[in-house]
Image (cartoon, rainbow, N blue to C red; front, side):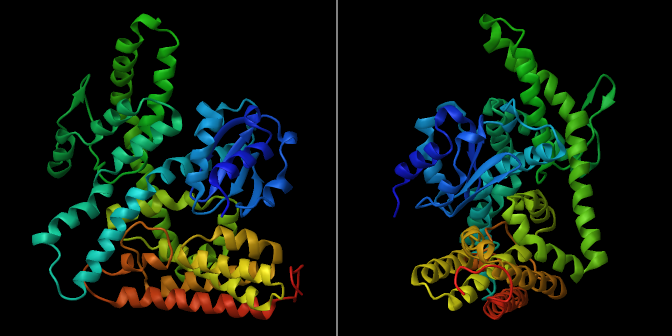
Length: 460
């Protein structure tokens, strides 16, 4: 196995050295770099690195696919890059202001914010899934010794604004304790109690503060912390160093929290409601067609690093509805990638390529699809087509059967317990197993059968 420290140093060398890096961050499987001079980096060398699963340039950002061990490699970069770690793309003076550059910036923000809190959400989801499996055996998990585990499963979602405040503060380089104060203003007992009564207990200059339930919200706290970052920096420029510690934090909160309560948080709440309603409308109107389209294009969405863009919807659905219907499509996607890689492996003659494809198939089966996508599907083309068709069929099937996910998890075979209905009814678990099994088989059969029909294959 490649040494993580050595791999980090080699990656840094191939992107032109520390002096060529503006900012470096990472998502679930990829190292992401914004560079000063792209001509100093070597994309082909990055693709061939032992320990890397591939590399690409997306909207000016260099992405090196590492897989599940990306965080360990990223941590080894820290002593080499220092304050360039986890910086903002906006810090790059050469960043394009085109629509493509702006969209890349938005996806980078979403990835950075939500990747950081995924471990907490997954932990809560797994505990909730195990409790659901226990409940299926007729055991009451709502009381007694199980009560504390129910609390553990709910904590990441009930205190979601605080998790998002920390990750957003990290992304926008603003003080974390101040960001938590912004989140605390949304969770203040007076406002929380007002949601139940319908009263408006807080006023400012004769105007009543709008009342929303922010406990399970996503956008309000993100908007508030982003506002804090800009206000803090604006004030910091004009305050003498002698008074910065006292004046800048106090003045920032005094400005940002009222603005957030009156403007930014309500806009964020309406955005969340509108987005959720739009997705509900799409799936209720198009039904299986919506599931097919999302599944069919999912490999391309992952290929271009845009798959985290659905995280706010999934998290919001689980927090408000108690379940999500998009994660089952992602689950089918990973199984489609697994099946397609497996089918391709059966046709490969070179033992090294066959072994790599089998390893990628297992990785996707466990929940990490990028190795299969970049190592097998894209170079050979027919497995990619097989995965897209199979995932489309699987996505449509999840809608037809009404499959749901009851916690936020990485969509791999180990996440199956989270699909167990908390009521103890086993039907949802049976339905998702049927969906992923059909998806995997179709992908494997198509990948095997289409091999060599069109495109260039690694093995003919």
